[in-house]
Amino acid sequence: MNRKSMLLLAASGVIMLTGCSKKIKGFEADYFTVNPNPLEVVGDRVPATVTARVPAKFFVKNAQVTVTPYLVFDGREVASQPYSFQGEKVRGNNPVVSYSNGGSVTIPVTYDYEPDMMTSQLELAFNVTQGSKQYSLPRVKVANGVVATAALADASTVTPALAQDKFQRIINEKYNADIHFLINQANIRDGQLKTSEMLTLQQQIKDANGDQRREIEEINISSYASPEGSLDINTRLAENREKSTSTYMRNQLKKDNITEFGELTANFTPEDWEGFQKLVAASNIQDKELILSVLSMYKDPEQREKEIRNLSSIFDQLAEQILPRLRKSRITASINVIGKSDDEIMQVLSSNPKGLSADEILYAATLVDNNGDKMKIYNTAAELYPNDYRTYNDLGLTQYVAGDYDAAQANFAKATRMAPDAPEPQMNLGLISLLNKDYRQANQKFGAAAGISELNDAMGTYYLMTGDATAAVKAFGNAKTNNAALAQILSKDYSKAKTTLAGITAPNAMTYYLTAILGARTNNDSMVNNNLRQAVKLDRSLATKAAKDLEFKNFNISAIL
Image (cartoon, rainbow, N blue to C red; front, side, top):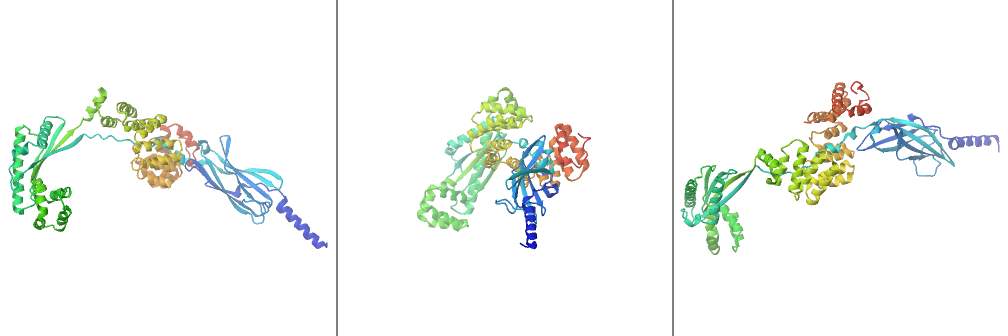
């Protein structure tokens, strides 16, 4: 072997030693970028992407590096999924980094969020396998802290669905009776005043007149003529029937000493083609479809009558079964049944709750503002009406608001067993699942509650807690709540968030805290300080939170805390 060959072989050995045999040097922090930095909570997790840019002549060809991202906080650390990459001469399926050219590697990171993670640092630990050797490299810190604004989503502030009462202060009832006339006559026959429906109508009017809780709103008379004969004759006939019936009704009211009857109104219809069509359609007359087709083909009353009379075999049946029923006056009494006043309901509730219907008791709960008072009323409702699912659902609602979630869940479940298709307890059980971060179950329950108005806030909060702020904004719509404003802040719609926060009717400490965050994100120093001061005043624990909150890292809030 000549000298030149020996030199080439030696050089090759040096290159092989350089590319394969030496150990990897320690990684530098500036090899890595983290997105986002600082980390941010999404839903109830902390996801991030670490990108490593390995320089040329760094990554040894026969080395495999396993990177374990650790989030270090409060004296402990939590590991994310390890991620491996390898040199060109390693047999394996991991991403390859070139020795000569270097390369880029992406490392996914995720952690389950804990509040103490707000003050933390993201470190990368490196374990190297190189042939039969294994060794560790120094850790590298690549990010500081976690922005935990998304974790402010709060299912406990969502108002559960109320199973509404059906209480009506005024219920309108209508009673009617028909007076039938002979053909071409308008006089009232005595027998028509003694029919069962006529006697019932008269008695209802009398009873209403003597009952303080019933009010005669109106008495109406509608008179008709059957549609055979000329229009002029039928017009006079219907008008006369109206007059004779009105005269009778006025005399009867006077006889019964009834002076308060709202208004007595009267009208007449010369030819009752509409009534004729309805009676024919409901009859068993042979060839009735032929009659109905004639009515649809001809709109002129005289032409209609002519064509129907031409059906001689059918017309006899009409004259016997249908037309006599159209020669009538109908008297209708509209009577309002007036329920208990609010004061009366509350008095009976206090003295004798058994004297109230389920709807009246449920309505009574809407007359008080204090949640504890509502709870007492719903307890009474559940005791008196244990077969009404609404009583348990609404009792559970007050327990949920009070923070007694176990009791609330038990009553929501009882309501669901009693009324499996009722949407309100389904939604409310979904809220319990949301509190427990059982998102799959929450989604199923919310799906079973489709259509009720309260579901929008529940679904918006669900989307917030599962990390979809855009869907949350859509679900909340124009709701004015802390959760709705939070969704808008996370979606960076700061103008709308400001409007939402300003529109909250009963702002609390979290309302002001969110407004302070909005001020920080829009670089408004006075907005930060004024609202953070008010938030801490209402809830002292927020001072500790604010001290760690990276939203305020560029603001001097020490005087507030």
